[in-house]
Amino acid sequence: MISPAAARVIPFAVYIAFVVLQSAAGDSLAQGTLDARWFYGGRFCVVAGLLWYFRRHYTELQTFAGVSGGRLLASIGAGFGVFLLWINLDFGWAVLGKPAAFDPTLADGSGVDTVAIVFRLMGMAVMVPIMEELFWRSYILRRLDRFDFLALHPAKASLYAVLVCATLFSLEHSSWLAGLAAGLVYTVVYMRSGNLWLPVICHATTNAALGAWVVTTGHWRFW
Image 1 (tube, helix red, strand yellow):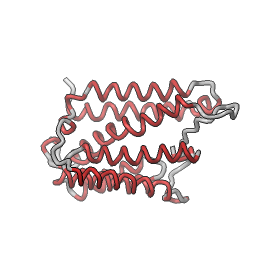
Image 2 (cartoon, rainbow, N blue to C red):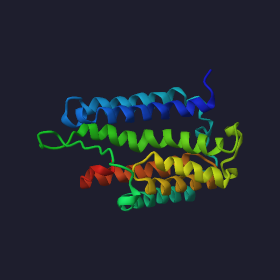
Image 3 (spheres, rainbow, N blue to C red):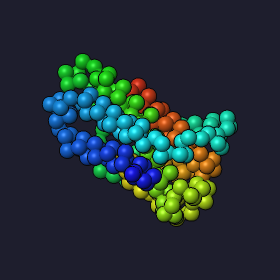
Image 4 (cartoon, one colour):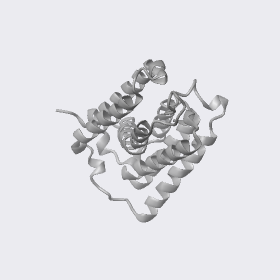
């Protein structure tokens, strides 16, 4: 029997395992000895499959209570604002290490790998927002305050939980300062609405805007 906590942790843990594997296989992916399309496609399918399998445990995604037209527009606007912060908060001390950039440029310089880009966009704009909001906001934020996290209304989260959750979320990203700002914005959206769909939409807006900008400009280091 899978617990509500495990249903939120397992997809995230598997995603992180793929990230670690990607780092370990970095040279092979860059040199084309491993097909990046299979790698990114596999990651998307496996994690999305887990989210689907555990879907009955995500009770907060089974209701749209608290979702209004105004809040929806505000969430989209906040997500776009986070995107603007993300591409501007990339100065020296605000970045940890060297970003593991996704570069779909073909080895012969003839263009880009369209299939890899499609899987990347689908993953970042659809799968990742759902997975991360279930883990960070639905689980970690509330679990920091209460073992029975589902019984805690998001608006009741303590300042301690808000700051710790946002800080841990920021450390998941090389652009930690942008990640901290994003974590705080997504948390506020969740707490004010009480509905997880709104931070998911906010997060999806950020990632979709970032993806579109990266593909258009070729600034692959932001991916």
